[in-house]
Image (cartoon, rainbow, N blue to C red; front, side, top):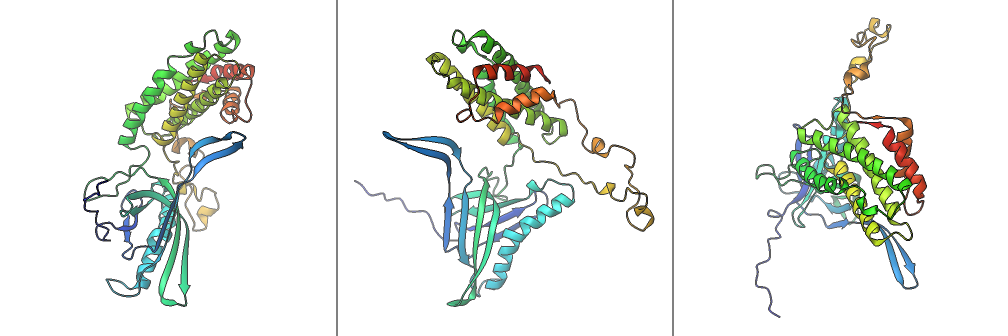
Length: 385
């Protein structure tokens, strides 16, 4: 076997830095490089699965990837460089721990979305660039090295979708709702809609009409809702707008209903292979739509500035506090968050039917076909888009 003669990549800290970047999505952009690399770095990527042993081996209930965690530990040195070890430790704590919470609180107070505050952990040594949420920050002192400030930081990985950007901004975040993600999401959504629009022709002769017709009716309603979201996003509407956010949230629930619906149909004993395959394809299509809405079309919750409401009582304005609110006597919430025409109208019965199916485990608590037929009829008949 021939040995590789390729020159290994540089491992120098200057070529492959490790550090943090904190941004609030507007002006603040703070960077903290770990000049002295961590002594220990651990990345844990769990799987959401349950393995059941059997006499002939084992089988697994797989629910995808879990939330990864990163743990780093080390020290910031003693002296040398531009700052002392203590000053470097204080800067690390300020930017990798205190700053994240501080900027999020400032965003809430200003009526902005705190999710715009991003803490990015950069490990070019391992080609790891992820958005994280700090979990714990520990200061450790040791009598064998009393001059060193030792740290231990635990983080949860929120996203690994980081846009390298250009050379001047290598850590530009590719957040949910960005143009690139919208384009990718629309392409993925179109592929799933193409399968959903084919309907339930694969079940002909496999299911009775009393079950098949209600499912067909629900499929028609679901197709209308999902296509509406696709058109709204493609048209360039603001995903954070009240009515658009409600439409996407409802369509997400509709896709979860469809996923569990066909997961239950697929498990019916005696179902022909052709119908079982069609159920699996529809289940996968609805699940993909659910993921697109959750990842590509997601918009963080809005935190409006309600400070004009302060001082609305008649007494507070006469005691030197806030003046009388200009919104006195009107529905402030209707003005601040108007509901546009995109918001769907859903009856309580339809809402209850959708929640019953989307929240029911199709494996541990499967519904009967008759139950699915009745709930599909309620769901499809109580929605207006």
